[in-house]
Amino acid sequence: MHDIKFIRDNFDIFKKKISNRNNSASIENILNLDKKNRQLIFEKEALEKQKKDISKSKDKKMFEISKEISSKIKKISDEQLITKIELEKIISAIPNIPHSDVPEGTSEDKNKIIEIKGEIKSKNFKPKSHYELGEKLGMLDFDLATKTTGARFVFVKDKLAMMERALSNFMIDVHTLENGYKEISPPLFASENSMYGTGQLPKFENDQFEIKLDKGDERKFLIPTAEVILTNIVKNQIIKLNDLPLRLVASTPCFRKEAGSYGKDTRGMIRQHQFYKVELVSIVENTKCLDELERMTNCATMILDKLNLPYRKIVLCTGDMGFSAEKTYDIEVWLPSESKYREISSCSSCGTFQSRRMNSRYKNSKNENVFTGTLNGSGLAVGRTLIAIMENYQIEDGSIIIPEVLRPYMNNMDKISSISS
RNA sequence: GGAGAGAUGGCUGAGUGGUUGAAAGCACCGGUCUUGAAAACCGGCAAAGGGGCAACUCUUUCCUGGGUUCGAAUCCCAGUCUCUCCGCCA
Image (cartoon, rainbow, N blue to C red; front, side, top):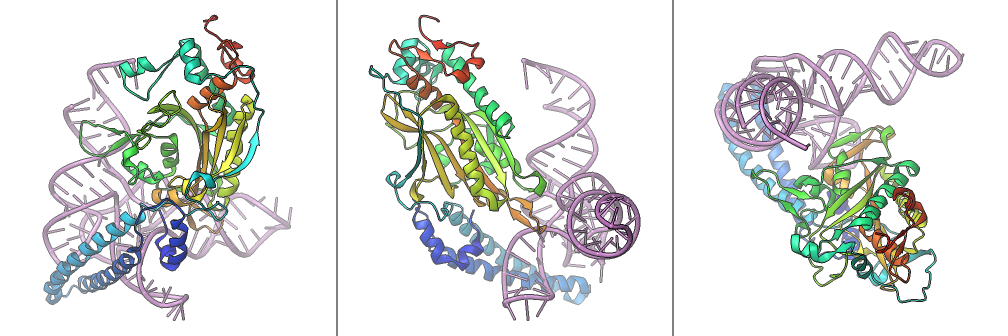
């Protein structure tokens, strides 16, 4: 959520910054609505004052007048409420303002590569895709998922299932033991309000799976990422300065409709309706967001370093960032079968954008209540990491060498092959 | 699912129709004392929003939404959530 005062005082700057993002919201009406809203508040408060004075005076002669004032107040405050809702509807659909050091651009070609790391090992055979490898091993079964569930799901079986589980455990261990994150096992449902807090609603409802409840009261959604539920932990809260930074990690399934991705990545498990992800969330003093973003991104790349997977780090341009982000690094891992880098992590600072929506604050050193900074990043997407290992660690016969660091998590096996299983 | 109890400021917790925005305690901030700290003592301390260059001022808010009343934390109705007991259950 944006600060209306900032918009009011810096409308041209605001407009310009927002125009860099893929944003369709019409913002021209904001100033008018804001002005109208404040005018109505002013009128309403003047009447409320009159009424209050009468009540205090306990002057029976004035009681009738007070009743008349009440009906006037009702009328004005109804109109004010409508105005305010309309204003909030517009503002809540406007994405965050990009940080000033984010490159401008409308599409991904303007993203900037920051770093390329890890050795891409050339193979003396044609690398297979993860789904060829997995199906040949009998450990990835897309047809079975189609039978039981539908498109964009997969059964992971046997040693690959074990590796998937090992990856989650390995990543969480690194983040809890080395990087100072606290492990959380959260609910996988989020309330409508929580979804609003992190910015999935109202604009991206079509991407979300809503739960059908027995009773018709509050709406619930399957989390599209643990970011939603972890970040909302601090919703409506005033945190003590001493308790910051708050660093949380969770491994959870994530559920996404992938609306608008029809035809994209239909083969394999790159893009599924359900996938595991280890998510990092930091709640920090709002002055420390960018430092924390660097730190968090390093925590994510650390996993790839330990797994010896080649990757690159890019900074997203203004038009390619997610709704709530002010700055985002994507980490892309090398996939030999496609001869390209594919996203495996995305780390974002949201500044105070989410905390305004959530009303999450802390007392700063001057003892003032100020909005927290929130960050989230994948550390990493487990399914895609599995893919990356399969493809990068494959040998000619279709077996997969298990990365050293994972072996302790897999009964010290060193290889997955159809023969051994 | 059945029966009760409850929801008040960062936290704990008084308060059943008229200076109650709300006692008290804790926490926090400032000060005195101390070589320093602690303790003790003194003072300050809710939030959001509006107006004003500012000092300041006004409005709203005691779970949420309605209602009664000139006036509601306090009375009435509906809802949400929490706790206790019983039942059921991984």
